Image (cartoon, rainbow, N blue to C red):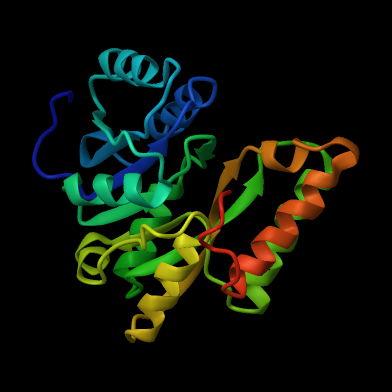
Length: 238
């Protein structure tokens, strides 16, 4: 399923989606609102064994937004790493942006990614902010951003040359968490200069931070991410 596009896209946005009917429409709308020409973008959504209307929402969006090329793939085995690897293999753009299905891109994000890529950085993490006005939600992601800036932690959603991604073998499909962190660490060990793009942002849902009473989700999520950063529990269920 795809709309008409002229030539090869410069950027492919890869989105793994499992039971994301509530969020995926807004995620796609944020891509359609990019300041970069839509004819030079491609969206690859990988339905990762959903049991809801995720695929239907994607198809309806594609039908209503003919200027943007949208492809829907299916990976039945639940695994973010596996779904993203499939999307990256099938993508045709020179640059990949990995975007979560419950997140939205700033309108200038693709433009900033292309500027940074052309500036000599083949890969880079992207500033993440809370899609929320709640002070605790915002503080949590501010703390994550501080780690990226002060301690050179490269993780979460990022962009990457497709050629580099495939050359490094993509994500480790044994991992349930921090597959992005592990990939970017591998890229750095191979000699790639991995930057952090802070001139734009991705707003993401804080739902994981709210899944326990008394806001204990903040603590459990932080501890889990910290352990994963240290290389502990990356293959545990998440």
